[in-house]
Amino acid sequence: MTSPETNLDVVRRTVQLALQAGAEQCDAYLVAYDETEVAVRLGELEKVIEAGSRALGLRVITQGRTAVCSTTDFSGDSLQRLATETVELARISAADEFAGLPDPATLAVGRGDGLNLYDEALESLTTEQKVRMATDCEGAARAF
Image 1 (cartoon, rainbow, N blue to C red):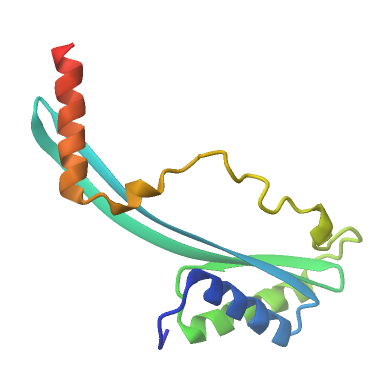
Image 2: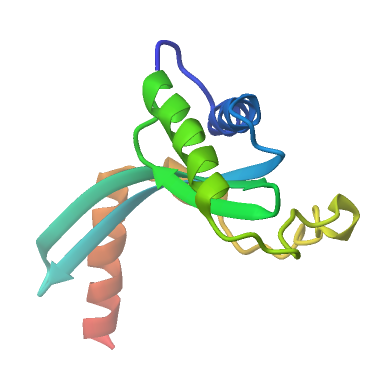
């Protein structure tokens, strides 16, 4: 990518490319995460692993035919290729009279608010803080 894009920008651009390539309907999803694994054993740091990943999936429906493809390469050429090839794959797949996107009115938008399933404070923790937390937890468990 030549300029920083948000994940939503990438999804919107990919959908637009698929429509330009001939998709009648399409949707895309992007999964992005960072993870840290900290292991402490007998009060000593045993392992620290930090990793991140982003992946984009594209579903295309045209003439009742569906194809789904994905990529982890978000460069402009790659997204264009993803859109074009997914449309091409849809065109050669078997038709399904039930293929199509759901009616937007039936989608559950915002209905999960307030469930407190994720603590955003976790994103601001440094690796050192995570190591300290793991060491403190192990110490408390061993002291018990």
